[in-house]
Length: 141
Image 1 (cartoon, one colour):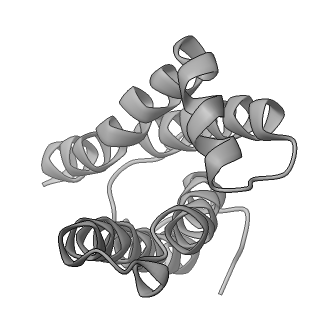
Image 2: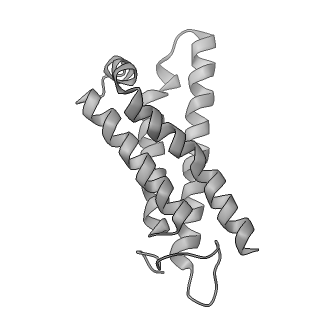
C-alpha cells in the first residue's frame, strides 16, 4: 500500500509542478493577468507563487516536511481562489460561471491539501497514514 500512497501524493502534486513551471517560464504573460486582477508586485508575486508551488509539490512527492508543503498549497489555493476567481463580482453570466468553477476547483484542492496536512501531521513512526517519508512531520499532533 505504501507505493499507492506515494503515487497518490505524486499525482496530487503534479498539477502544482506544472503550475509552478508555468508561473516561472510564462511569468510575463501571467504578470499581465495578475496586474489586471490588481495583485500587488504582480511579477514578483507570480514568480514567488511559482517557486512556492514547486517547493511544496516536491515536498509532497519526496516526503520532506510534506505536512508543511501541504499547508503551503492550501494557503496558496485559498488566496488565489479569492484574488483571481472572485465570481461574485462578475456580471456576465458565462464569465461568472467560469470563475465560479475555477474558484471551487481551487477551494476543493485546498480542502484536499488540508486533509493531507492533517494526516501528515498526525503520522507517527509506527503508523504511516500517507506512505513513507524522508523526514518526520514538521507539525506534530
